Amino acid sequence: MKVMVIVKASTGSEAGQLPSAELLDAMGRFNEELVAAGIMQSGDGLKPSSAGLRVRFSGAKRTVTSGPFAETNELIAGYWVWNVASMDEAVAWVKRCPNPMTEDSDIEIRPFYAAKDFAEVEGSTEALEREQELITTLALRQAKVNNYLFFSGRCEEALDYYCRHLGARIETLFRFGDSPEPIPEGAIPPDFDNKVMHAEFTLGDTHLFASDGCSINGPVGGFSLALTLTVEEAVRRAFTALADGGSIVMPLEPTFWSPLYGQVNDRFGISWMVMMPGQSPTD
Image 1 (cartoon, helix red, strand yellow):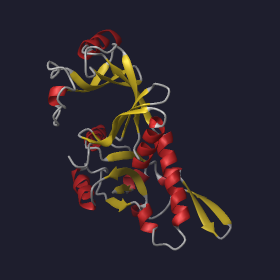
Image 2 (cartoon, one colour):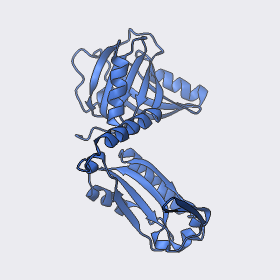
Image 3 (cartoon, helix red, strand yellow):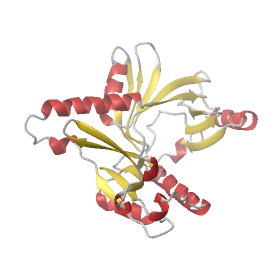
Image 4 (tube, one colour):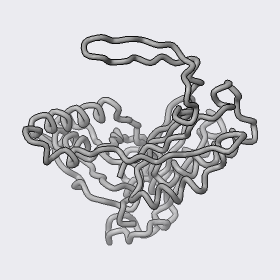
């Protein structure tokens, strides 16, 4: 379920008081935990209401009012959007959060509406279909695309070289032998357990994926495009479109590293990996 976790404003935040370096560090580490757990989708702090505007609706009239606004405890100082299994899980994570204010403070958790919540509204079918189409279109436009490089047994050598000479930074690396799921028999050579199954590294401002692939016979430097989407319907639509006139290498299915992952060669000969971020909910 999708929830908004709302940091309520305080007297200090409304006065424009900035957090200490210690609090920034603590909140940063908490955010890293959320990202690592695959829960955090977005989050930001908001400036005081003195920097904001309100638009009041009354019939056809629109009235704009400048901040600051009263009722500090009803104002928002920041928020996260999380994807959690339940409200209980959201509460458990909030309890681990450092106090975001220098004084006593409140964090509110509110679930988002889902399309199914409006299914019983008479005459809503067409509007809900349009809404789902907009959600899918937005997800496609926000997709992340990464080059996925294959080194046919020389991946670790290549990464070491790029780190030494180009300032690359390795962020993730795991080997075939680290897989919690057994590798299908014959899928890789017998001496590939210590080879790189998947790595992520940054070169300049570019985030790249890399692997040894599944053999030593392929061309070093071969590549795929990794398309990451956060909405399941968008993943399925993109995969189906890429497979049309092309060929499916691996059908869309949950894996230990993704709730939905598949490989496809499109009609133009480009290799794609289509996936959702995070681990499979069955893990």
